[in-house]
Length: 579
Image 1 (cartoon, rainbow, N blue to C red):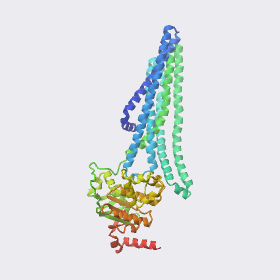
Image 2 (cartoon, rainbow, N blue to C red):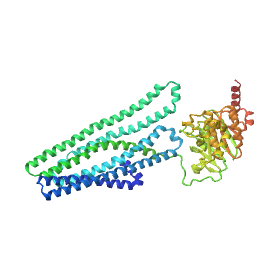
Image 3 (tube, rainbow, N blue to C red):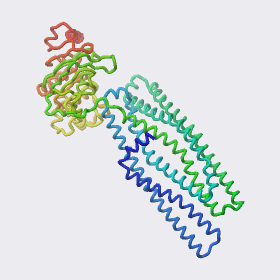
Image 4 (spheres, rainbow, N blue to C red):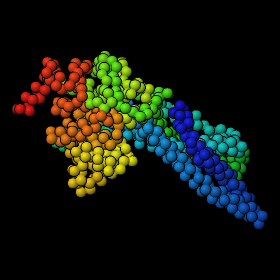
């Protein structure tokens, strides 16, 4: 009920459609309850012998019956279409809600989740709401009304016979309750496993080149097969329970029919019931047991829908670790000053990544971060964009604590080029303008020139309209990275963070890019994270990270002449280049 009430609260927007659909469903039930009574009256008139008066009455009843059946077509259309319209719009709303919620989650959330599972929750699990609202709930309402209405009519015809008709209901309800407890966990597992299967398939498709290159098709197939087997096993267990439940319900309803027909025949033999009432009773009896039999299937389907709903609600109720404060400020006329004050950070408890980091990057200054792999350089970049909050200390931009700055405002003022470049499956122009959709072609080309990619794009058959493919698969690593740099440059953010941004380009292109980036000095605060020391030589200041701390700080000339990590790194790279 908690799940249903939560969904009902979300469905208020479409209550008008649901109300009209529900009214149409009630009218269908009214027609279904009225029709057998009219047929019984017609049977009574015919059995008593027809004359001109009774014939007119039969014809009149037949016309009324025809009108009722015609009206049922209209009511059925309104009930089905409006319920579907509301349900599919609700599915759309939930898909957007889930996506927006996921879009607001921090990278930490995605470290613990599989993207394929999240896609499954967004697409597959939300789709079960259509079954719930367009089929299961309306049909349940119809069935309940039909059973209650028929029971009342049967009691008015013959109370004893009516009570015998209700004999199977308690047994069916008891078996239904047992089924719910047994079957829901299996449907919950099928939805969860379907998400895992989607995640495995997505992972395999993304790494298909590696699978083929290393000849691991058999292992990757085995992983998919294992997850498909788990899904099938839980689904079959659920269906096995249903396979026992359905014939049991059919037997109980058939037993009720046998009892009613047998006892009804006995009452007819005693003369306690007439032919008209027996016909009406048998007609209503069919109408009585059909929804009860259908209840079994609805119960099974509803468990699957509720299992999907639980997974969707789990996403919607996930806490957002990075969010705006109530009085979040917008940075107006940003200068790009960055200030780290005694910042410490750890992804997991008691495992520090950064410890007591303090430095200031003045507006227009280029600060380089160097150090061995795993010393926290990329973490510093993520903290600057507030993908995470520091465990201790404060990070400020233009004097504002980042935790008090509106996230959209902050990230609009920080442009990042990461080592793992991501391009969307669209054109080169669309990828470059992703940060500024309204940019002109001249601005796009200028940004591409700064990134030293304009000439290569111009040589392509479709130029800036060239489609890059999924994750930029149709481009080289260097081309993808330079397009990402052009995207960052075009954003005109006052703070530019380059995290190993030139790692996939040759030395000559790297030199050109560095010259272009230096042209931005004075108007952009640039944070350069690099392993290649040639990338950082001309930085205004170099920070050397060691074991999560700043061990050295100064210009290239100062540090190269000072014993320490930076000098050792320089000597090591010079030796490697000579070899």
